[in-house]
Image (tube, rainbow, N blue to C red; front, top):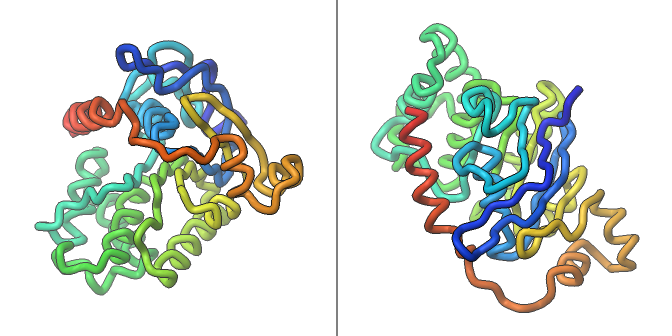
Length: 265
């Protein structure tokens, strides 16, 4: 079975800024993979390339066995995306948000309706399916975003800070849903997080800085090899203690995301 995600000598430049610098790694099918790094480390740029929202300057990237440059449509069919920033249409109901998503993916009506019920029940929002999204709490909105990301049964689900700002009960629920999906559907999770507690739940983590891969392995192995007390010490040891500004490429990524998402529709 090919890796769920494979990156080889990936480079992405924005003018004089090298956001991703000769990056290579692979994620196995069914793995929970953590992507760590300070602000501006190149995490978002890499994920946007994997999601076909940006094109690399050089190197290759594939998801679910499909080349991100040569087969972008197949990559998009194979992935789900849960961005850090809210992306629901809060004027629509939960049901309408999912229906719109299913239509974008050209899901047949009968399949779309069946999946809408399945995922809403899965995230425990079935009873609120006709409620307008703006009336939902932050945790409910996040669960609806998870449901939307699962509508087309993706092989790989990308999550950008999936539990940021959520209360402990909702974080626990999100992690329980992820565990269930891995067990039942062998879904691969590719997650960015700044929470070392969450990173320690991952099968493996990759630590980036300045676009380069600095460490890769199981959290416990990285802690042991560095003779550190915990993963946070490992992280600070390889990335330093200096405060960071945001990614210099953030504005370009945002423009690219809007252009690509319009193209999907």
